[in-house]
Image (tube, rainbow, N blue to C red; front, side):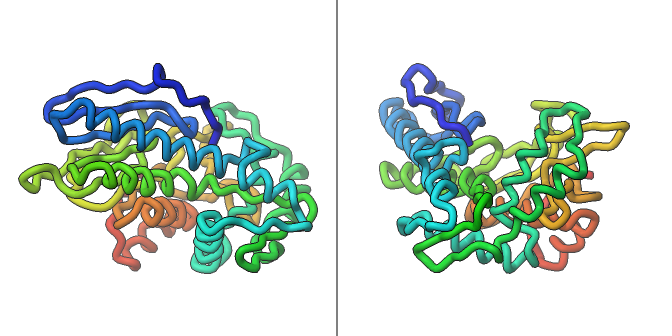
Length: 302
């Protein structure tokens, strides 16, 4: 997540049918809140609150900022840092994900981005470069005694796999604190609704195509909860006809083999949906079997 300055000019409010849409750009992705209301001023208040919460979380957890909590944890290293309750809850969530995924969901694997740059090119990193980084990966090497986290020399954490989804959940909570209206918060395709529209009508939500940017692979009806998608539509490498996804195996340092092109998950919260989508991708060719076994509502594209 990269932080951008908050400016009123970057925020847009438009009326579309029964909704007001307030859109802005944060966390390196387009963001919006749709509010079913005829009150433009109220919709704008909600949009301002949603944007403020998105930017707060972006500034707090961005790996690109030395003054963020993540930046300060990484800088402190073995000296350790005592974190606040919100950060502690996210770190504890990450620990639970590591355990539940048999070590595949690992927030220390972000260091591999030093080798991998998923920009759509054909530039693969050298095998030795990856081998040199693997000793810096592995949650068990971290000392986590809440609320203090200590990292071995050279290791880092990266909450990018949790922060955007967490921002969606928090932003919706902030919006509902202003007015209990039908609304949808969408940050880069990860979204959550407050409930159905008036009269129990569902929200129509598109599943993005993996073949064409901006295209649609299908349409879902959502009355409650959240949706999150993990896939390689935007972040990938292509070399000799082989597509390399940005979902990395923390044990090998290489992209997970035979993963779906896209996995969309429905869950109560956006955090839950996002984690599950990532876990499914990490299963590779066993993604669909995992989702079926767990009874998870999911849509996979191969």
